Length: 122
Image 1: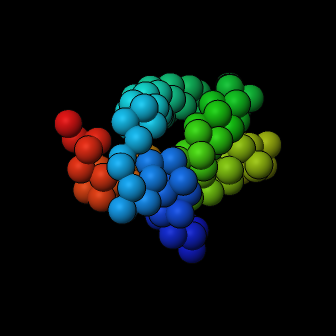
Image 2: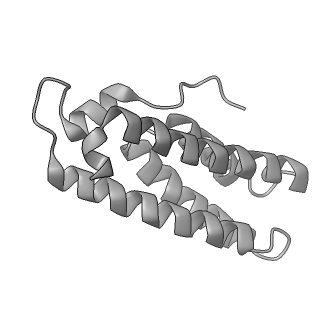
Image 3: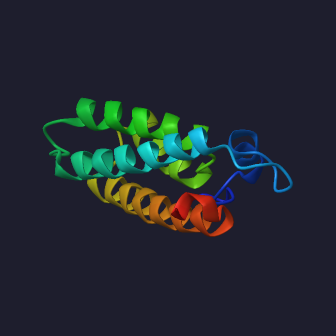
């Protein structure tokens, strides 16, 4: 979908600290909350009827896009932005493709972040 990198590592360094700095435990907790909220929002978006509730899909996409961007999940934010920005004209197939891309990138991003920041696994 997007040519953007999966994760904006500079953004995450601002949040968690650079590799030679002590890991910010409080921000780690916020990251865990973001992951849980993101999972819930993806479930909610997927459960929402595309034909009947496009406004709800756009609002939920907007919310998850913003938090994803804050945590450096660039491609997730890009896919959700595509849904939000084009909700009135996007085809069901293009919507589904963007949602599938966002979901896949969300879970791939979590794995990469947890691999880099081992403190998140404690």
